[in-house]
Image (cartoon, rainbow, N blue to C red):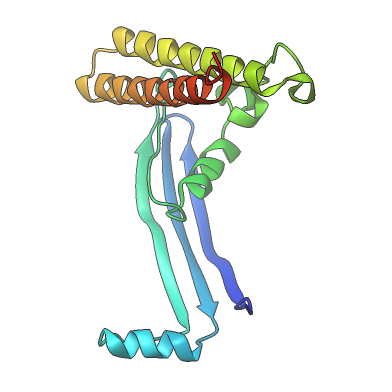
Length: 178
């Protein structure tokens, strides 16, 4: 299978940060270009679609965002929708002590991953999911805004589902012979 050549380039990246008001303003757009294959043409014609090898996308056009000192920012969106671009733009204007990146958070595993057997890895994963569930549940209890509370409770529910998945795996793989 031949890989198609793709082109991706950010063609506009402008941001302003007003430290007095705490307001960010963003203008970000990018362009893509891909080779058009015979198959691409067939599919486009079958669905009655136009086809172009070049596209320009505007992610943010004079978007203003105000983030308070104690605000928690949670972005969600489809893959490729610009979440990381936006977060990196925000963090670039903050002082180091004003932002926490997940990559800066160190997880102190009880053992090095290479030393864990499968059973130990599943147990550790279940413990981590339980801790994450508790964190989100506790955060939900501390906020007054209902939409943020619902967000944290939804995240807690996702962690509970992850833990359940590990528990099922443990039962099916580790306990199957008992």
